[in-house]
Every structure is written in C-alpha cells, then in structure tokens.
Image (cartoon, rainbow, N blue to C red):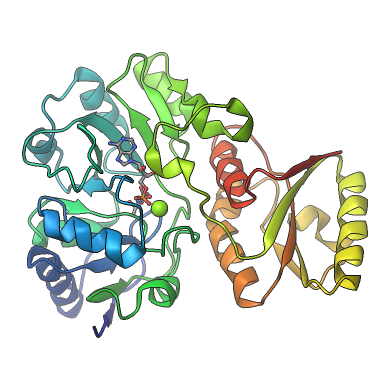
Length: 354
Ligand code: TXA
Ligand code: MG
C-alpha cells in the first residue's frame, strides 16, 4: 500500500483552502474504511472509523497491537458522547466542562453502537474530545467517531513527529497528515468514571490534583504505578512493556553528584565491554556526564519541556544504535508523575536507588 503524506501548518487555528482539502481527504479516508494518522495535542493518532469493526481490526493489524488492548474513541462535539455511552453521568459533564476539548480521556459504559472490536471486548469505552483543531476537523469529516491509538508500532514510543509515524507505519496505512511537532508529547490522562471514586488509569497533562478539584476524591489505579504494586493495571494497554527504546534503559535515583558518579562509572565499564552508551540528563547536570551520546531532556524546572522531548529522545537513541542508556530521575509531582510513569515503563522498571 502506498502511504500518502499531506502537510498542514503546525497548530494552525484556521486553515487555508488546501489544508481544508487535506483534512477533508483524511476524513474521507477514515469514513471509507481506511486508516489516516493525524496530529493531536498529545501525540499522533492512527485514525479509523470507531463504529466499524473492520476498521478497528485494521488498526490492530497495522500497529501489531494485541486485540485485547482497547482503542480510544475520539469525538468532536460534546453532544456526541451520549451516542456511544449508555449513560452520561454527572461527573462526566463536570469534567468535560472543565477539561474538554483537551488531553483527557474518560472511561464510561459503552452503548450498542460501539463494536466490541473497538473496545477490545470490554463493556466500557474510552472517549476523548481533542483540542487540536486539525484533529477536530478530521473527526468531523470522518463522521464524528474516530478510533485513534497512538500512531506507533506497538511497543515503540508514541510519535511526536510525523516522520516517526512514517518510520513505523509507512506502507501499512493510507495516509499521514503531517502537522509538525505535537504540543504536549505524552498521551492523554485516562480517568475511569465507571468506578467510585473515579480512578486515574494513566497519568497525563491533566493531573490528579486538577481532576480532584472538579470531582472531589480521585484515586490512582495502583496497578498503573509500577512493578512493585503486584497488581495488574486496569487499562489493558498499561500492562505491556511500552514506550520502550531498543537499548536497555536504567533510571538512576539519588543526589545529583552521586548519580553522576554512578552513571559515569557504568558508562565507562559498558563502553569497555563494547556497548554504545547514552545518558538522558537535565540541562542543569548535563556537563557532569561522560557517555557516547548525551541527550538533554530540558531544565528540571520545566516539566512541560521534559515531556515534550522524552519520546523523541528515546527514538533518537534507537536511531543512533545506543545499547545502554542511563537516565536521571525527574520530578514526581503533578505532570511530573506522567513523565516518570512513561520513563519507568520504558525502563521496564529498572531503577537504581543510590
Ligand atoms: O493522547 C492520547 O490518548 C492518544 C491520542 C492519539 O489521542 N491516544 C492514545 O491511545 O494514547 P492508545 O491506544 O495508545 O492508548 C489507549 C490506552 C491503552 O492503554 C488502553 O488499554 C486504554 O487506553 N483503554 C482504552 N479503552 C479502555 C477501556 N475501556 N478501559 C480501560 N482502559 C482503556
Ligand atoms: Mg499507545
């Protein structure tokens, strides 16, 4: 299959006639049962018609994704929510008012219209109303309900640039809408409203504190937190080793000087053993490290900047053939939780505590 790529300006709010035509084209591809990747404010998504079983099957196939890992249905109008869920609880209205359109996904009981292929056999459905204007247009042109997982091969970091979508999916999908670099760089927060109190299944830009202000008490799924909870995560996708670079990644936790000493001893030994070594460091500590490849994640003060660059850095290590990677540990409150959640998964929970 030939994959057609069309370009639109990054984060445009209004579109030129050519861009409008490109978005219409992508929408039509999806409506006709094909697959089109497009930017959202979080990461690139791989869109197919959410109400069509065959389209969902194609998505799993193109990504090499396990079929029990459900897809998020993307909508472009709040009113459409009631068409795909059995009931819209009052909490859903409140968090939609506060955070939609935006990087938040809600889990609700599904209606008959959503095929079980889309929800990986579950009776619940994940729904998101993205704020990215081009994404909204594509969803509208596609008929209003677009299943869109991150547009990567299953197990790879989610794409933050169209070139990463092409690397993973060229020849396997009909179309890529290249809208430049995405804004947030990590996937949406997922909150499950079918349990009481509501539970965060995947941390993201919309933090527990932000949700708590609107909903009162909110829990975090213990299984989503990591290896030592002994519990399976409730979002099926969170159980897979994910976001993973090809090289082995280790997170080093500890005071800055001793962490740098430890990392430098390790990279020296690894280098001698024939490994290609890499470090993910913050701007503040970057000049302390010695390794074959050193990547700056941004300032420790700037969580948004770190989130923005994380997946790109992981992919660059793959491209450069780095086999052993050491990372600083980053802030763990607020949005920082989402960063550490992804980094821990990429590391397969290998953490050295000094
Ligand atoms: O930011 C995002 O959410 C991006 C963009 C493209 O919108 N999409 C995304 O989709 O991250 P995906 O498929 O890569 O991740 C969806 C996650 C998976 O972990 C999946 O298991 C979980 O959502 N999920 C989907 N439906 C669910 C359900 N009914 N119950 C529990 N978890 C669900
Ligand atoms: Mg994904």
